[in-house]
Length: 119
Image 1 (tube, one colour):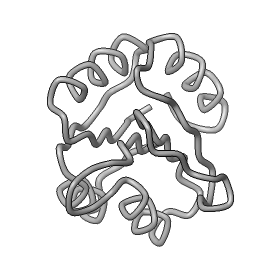
Image 2: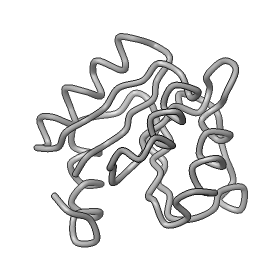
Image 3: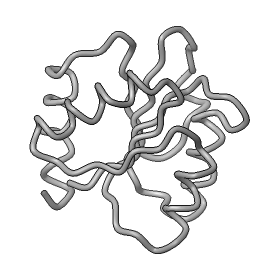
Image 4: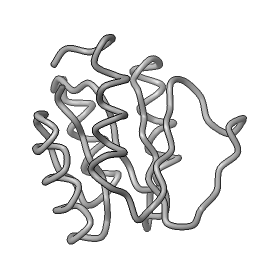
């Protein structure tokens, strides 16, 4: 799968990169929702969006809402260290992974997504 990962904290973004690549997938990294949205709007292929919820300027939830307008069935993975979202606040296929996270959590998630997405 080709993953878009968005996280404003650089070290956590690097950890996400390592985990995603260790799980056998490719990843595009962004430190802002705005940059990620520009990438996704420009016709690039991706299979899943992983985004932090608590980011300045554009939160992960706002980013996902924009992306849902273009790709309503795209799986979105929300990672958060403290912000809670009720399921009814979210649309489309989504998953929540709390911080701190582990490679096992992402490995399990990617296994769930693999049958419906290209590897």
